[in-house]
Amino acid sequence: GVYALNDWYHVVATWDRSTTAANVHLYVNGAELTYATQTNGVGAYDSDASQSLWIARGGSIYFPGSLDEVRVYNRALSGTDVYNLYKSGNVVRKMVSNQGLVGYWPLNEGVGNKAGDFSGNRFSATLAGTPLPAWSTGKR
Image (tube, rainbow, N blue to C red; front, side, top):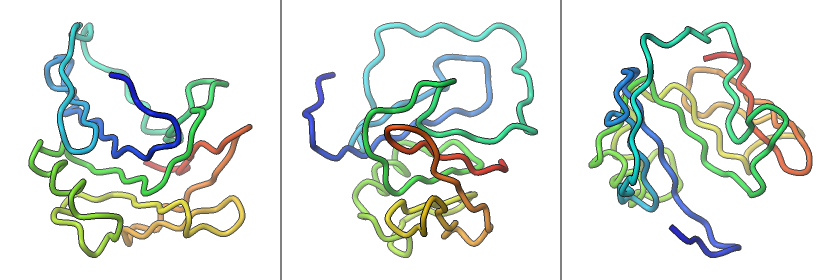
């Protein structure tokens, strides 16, 4: 799709840990995107549990935009969950479904380059990178 510059979008990716591409879902503003191509993975995935989780960074490439309200769950959200989160606004207490919430980092609640975890799991995040921050939780 085409997205306007300087607008905020609610973006969600879900995955159920399978190697089937049909089990990866992408949503923008509560609605699932349509997919032109789906390619299944090959075999089992390699565990990366000992690695830090990076959001908005791939190698030395950083996402050229702003992030806010980053959430990580230990389950694949349903389409209804995603829609309800989109409609609930930006306050974690108003979330319709927080079952399985592992980490919640509102970017504007951090101090310096640290963002506190508002999920109750105490996974602090470090904002790093140039020109704009990426997220690293240091834990999964």
